[in-house]
Amino acid sequence: MVPRYARPAMTAIWEPEARYRIWFEIEAHATEKLGELGVVPPSAAKALWDWWATNPKIDVAAIDAIEAVTKHDVIAFLDWVAKEVGPEARFMHQGMTSSDVLDTTLNVQLTQAADILIADVDALLAAIKRRAVEHKYTPTIGRSHGIHAEPTTFGLKLAQAYAEFARCRARLVAARAEVATCAISGAVGTFANIDPAVEAHVAEKLGLAVEPVSTQVIPRDRHAMFFAVLGVIASSIERLATEVRHLQRTEVLEAEEYFSPGQKGSSAMPHKRNPVLTENLTGLARVVRSAVTPALENVALWHERDISHSSVERYIGPDATITLDFALARLTSVIDKLLVYPERMQKNLDRMGGLVHSQRVLLALTQAGLTRDDSYRLVQRNAMQVWQSDGQLSLLELLKADPEVSAVMSAQDLEDKFNLDYHFKAVDTIFARVFGE
Image (cartoon, rainbow, N blue to C red):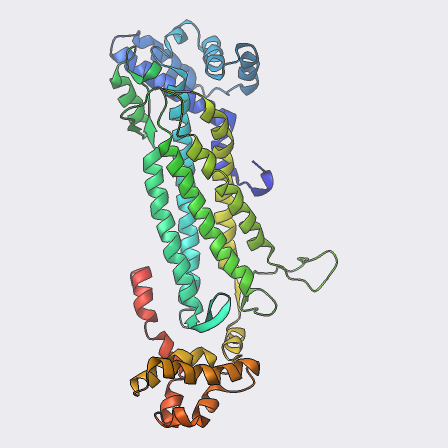
């Protein structure tokens, strides 16, 4: 975790004290149910909860010192609690194994992280929607292969982003449900030394579902799915960030990141206004995606368990969620403050002498009786002259002067095909599909 790209709420989930508090709750809830079942004295759970009610500070350094000797983190924690609570603490962890605590805790942390990320996506969706509605009918050029294609609106560009992040949200909700399971099944997951009712009790208290078969570890396909979804969200962030970066290029300059008073763009060139935030988002997306392959490789463990996944998850759990949380918040701010230049959009639309209307003329010529091949040839012949003139010539005027075109289409008919508003007649339909309004 890099503090520069971290926010407090998400970072707190992965702090050692937060992890140990979840460990304690798992152990105390399990002991509570064991007491109800008559396996341990009910006084054991009471002693644990009474101690907990005093809101003790988790002494991370003391636990670390014990672990330095035991070389086992869960045993170190249990030893520390036992010294704090007293004799009743000996009934903790009855019939349980370390993975019951570790895996269930990880899933609690991932669900907590998912809740923050879902809220992040909601904030981003709200910002995108506001700007999309604002620019619903702002004309701009659509580009394919980076080349002028046909007119669109800036609102439609943002509507596409909204629809994409709405899908990201749905995937994240599903991934949260997928990973929100609990395993308290003991060695190799057979419940030989612990009643399944204990697992059900702990799961209910923690807001998790029972893992159907946990072979001592919770199956890592669940976690692979979770991190894969984070990777997809990161890619969607990069897609929108890349669009902003392209639109901010000097030759385009249709939109740009907000440049605050006193901000400096370059140590050498005082005139620079660089897309530093969206470039940063592109890099952060790579970091989040880097967690996906290790998570997929964690699925294949030896037999009922090994710990090859453990070291990986100690990295990717905090790093991927903390980085994505930061990236979503940063992108929300970028969109919220994005500077949009409709006049420049219109100037770019007009830059190539009406070439953006070529398809309408092509279709009209076919409807006028020419073959598609002849229609394409006639339009392209005139379009290439405009292209070679760098937009100084007018496609409309060249077509009017072309005898093969004027033989089948009047000047008025041709002018009708250069109406910009024609391209926007379905904007309401698309917005209704995206925003449900």
